[in-house]
Image (cartoon, rainbow, N blue to C red; front, side):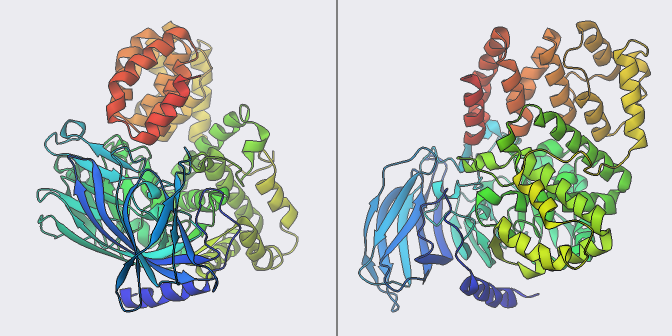
Length: 611
């Protein structure tokens, strides 16, 4: 579909948007007024580590009596606020900035004499903006140029743009970005793979998005096409390997379209970031941000691409109205991800991936308070809503629905769900209101609504939750048991042809503490210390920490310094701090690694070090 058609459609969606329950993570007065379009004009200053310029907001007033616009900000320096009349003439507007809350930031309250169709805020971001990371050349792969990228999820967009920072509000946007001429700027919008490096970039996003999907990056970026509507951006030394690893992107798009309807975002490009990126991937529309840790040369970790692509339907298209309902984004996406992997790479791999994830969740449940095991989150910090339960338990519920109703019926329901709620932000209750007539009542006797609600609102996972069988994982479990019992040598495990998920399964199932002799034998046979595969290395180092296996320390320190992905490094810090010696080592590593970590990773590690 053309941009024009989407542009007109987005206006209809925004006009029809209904108010949701108040978002506890936003100050925005969305019942009175909503932002429907954002126009950014920003300069990128690497010396000052700041974005500076203006944000112009088109407003849709809901309350005729309202005269105040409340925006979310965090550590922004507000220089001027103007109200723009229908004639385009700008007038200074009165504003106040509330006292800073450590989590939510500061409410920007703009008082207007009359309901203006637009306001313009001139501002600068802080060098410490939580949603931006400024990297020195030494922290990049190429070592020649600085690099900057954003991470807006969950509520970090407010640290670089003043806006209504809630997933319940969707807006279109344009942006004019000026940057050093030797660098390329990209955004979650229409990127031109052939754009000259002239320092002047313009972007348009015609489909309405929530604020957490607003994204920008500037760096020494090369680009390779991977299909008619897909490309990979990365530093020059990484781009060829990335393009090879993600060569199946177009095939994944086509596969998902066959199951769940058309891809509605025109292009699907991938930006491979430096290793400090705190997540595996971020589903910014049209431009997924991805960690380089998934580039291992054998496509064994490309399920990350399947996951971020799946967000183009679940999350970006149908969005959680507040972070309390994050499982609607991540649970649905994890389910669709597994279906993509099955269709493209086979059922055996898809089953292995789900078994590995579900086993990990079962183990996690033993240490998680029951209240935190529910799908609907009550986390005070929006970032904490991104739990294994939102991802894995949410997907497990959908697998249960598929098993009860049959794949054909469930696929039909899910495609209708994506079509019905397209470009809307919804709550769990709205999802259930659609589920009842369109699946539960349509096929009576398969599964009750009360059963579904127990999955959502109660802790744990039912004992009869479906789990696929995997003969290969069963054989690996048997070999592991024999090795642990001393009945099989490490060299005889038969692991030469194990894929990444099979190694993950083997290592995840090891006893809490092994002997130094066992770890030494395992390492001698399979060279796990310093393993280039980040997923395998993470599990090996956790086993080494549990056994206080000192020979792993040197390579572990290198790993923790080189990688900034929270999922990979934070658990190592959390385990190390459980002993005085481990805590001293963790502090030593962090002192060296901290400058290369994203602010979100720093916060998570510092929280662990304080325990």
